[in-house]
Image (tube, rainbow, N blue to C red; front, side, top):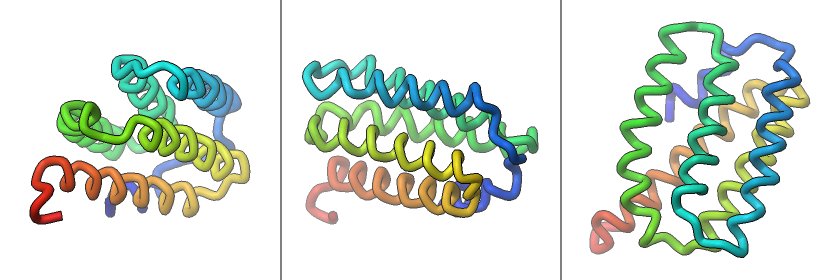
Length: 136
């Protein structure tokens, strides 16, 4: 969460238009999930969003650490998805991508970092509730 919040230090403006366009396309794809429960599509959209965002990180080491953490946590998240509320999962994805696009379009890199941190915190809380519901 600390890394996500501070990634703005490693992102150069302006954000390439192709990155924004990719994120907008993925936001549109995510709409399909409202009417079709497809865990593989959900996972692919998440991965593609992360790939697009990772491409904005100019510091090679920060990008590598971010990508490694994403894939480590992603495996845990993916195992929990069947236990999550599907409609909530789709809405979180859609709103997260929309808000990230908005922050990047405005050049608000600190806001982008805060949004990424909040996404990580929400995801961690949801995973913890599934893994050990008694303690959550």
